Amino acid sequence: MGGTVRQAGVFSGFSGSEYTSAGVPTGTHYTAADHVFDAASDGTWIYGWNEETSTLMRYDLNWKYQGSLFSLTSGAYMGITYDPQNNSIWLAPWTFNTPSGYLYDYSLDGKLLGTLRLAGSSEIGCGLAYDTADNTLWMFNWG
Image (tube, rainbow, N blue to C red; front, side):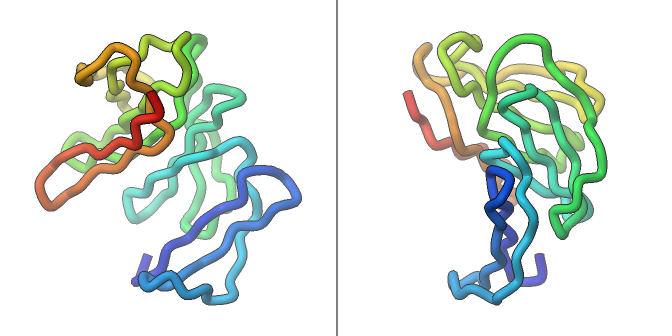
């Protein structure tokens, strides 16, 4: 956002912070986004996956909660990124209970649009990013 990175706190009582692109704290703080370990933005909204409730949460650009978009009844996800090509959210599995080895592409209203098979069946991700320069997905592979 305007040359800064806005990070929320993960649990109540912990605030997030804003940093310049060089990593220098600006002194601005944000309220916690409980149980949201990874987030993405489309430039208008911040999307965070609540790992405890399996819900896609929407926040304004100052990390103020604006509502829930959809929930999934099964599976645990942590990595999330926004895909501007089709206005969707990609999710990476966090546990081996969720079919690991895939990334999942969901519309903002919760329809599964597709999957992307990863190299191994035990791959799980706790961080996911979309690079608009070359339309690639980047994942921190915990598995």
